[in-house]
Image 1 (cartoon, one colour):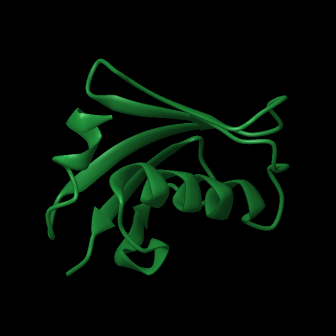
Image 2 (cartoon, helix red, strand yellow):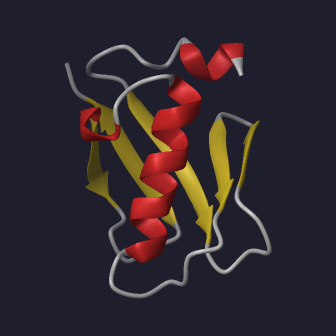
Length: 83
């Protein structure tokens, strides 16, 4: 996860592909995109919030420092690291 930790710089945009309803939570980094699988269902923003929590944990930052910039209802999302 050292490559992910280097992304925890304020102003960095992180592209994420979220797969909701997975059998377990996991995070993988491939081809410049963070692939996140979450057990949360794709309803009422639950999967997005679960992905935000998992990404923040991987980056070693507070979840409040990740702002969803685009993709609220899409599997493809972009988060911005806040100061």
